[in-house]
Length: 305
Image (tube, rainbow, N blue to C red; front, side, top):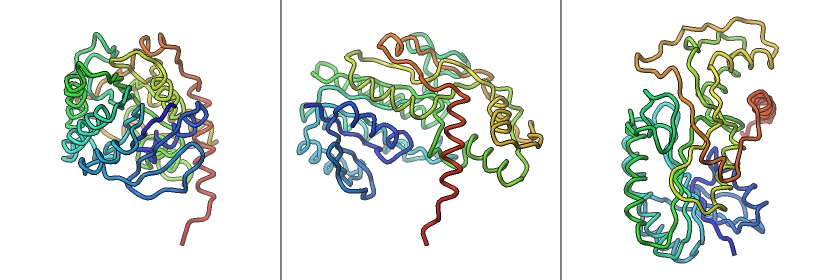
């Protein structure tokens, strides 16, 4: 029986990955800090605080999942880069992996971040680009990976470390680029942006989720970039949204200053992940159409009193 424990199951990526895992025949134990809906034929929800490492270890010992998909971490927009609880997440993640291995777990897939890389290199390849994080978040993720490799060395538990680049799509935090631009265009307010000449690697959340679901099934270990492999200028995203929303204004490019060390290019090499049989399925235009449609649908739904 394929039994996967998913942390962060109610998060941005977690919500997208659960139906994919169900479709692939997984028995799913989903963890969230807050109580969720009733169990289904494929998914059982568990309320747990991963910072309570003793309780987490007891849960792992009871469930004894064969696989682990660890997505949980602090991703609060504007705060997570230097949040002190990155250190707590480091500790909790290592404790989780230790408990998983002790319970007989066979394969762990863990969400890392492109923030582990030295962004001065622009094109990031798992085996070539050095890791020199610029933030506490990146340092904590990198340290978790390095320590996890040692923790699991010599144990019959595989580790796949997935460095996620720039996911977007339905459910993305309101303050991020795409939701904030849609909001400004919809309300007729000014669309204030940076110069927009930076190239970034955006991947629709459904493709991100598909990559994680895929990595649970393969047997290769090590580091994998989860990205599109196709850089796009930020201003292109803004102008594409303007076209899709039939917005006739002019974006205020340059209104928001960028740091002096802001990288002009940040893109992931996905050769290694492609070699396992995965590839992106959603192009940028289609992904933005999907994101906009969901955003409009959510706005039309009545709010709870």
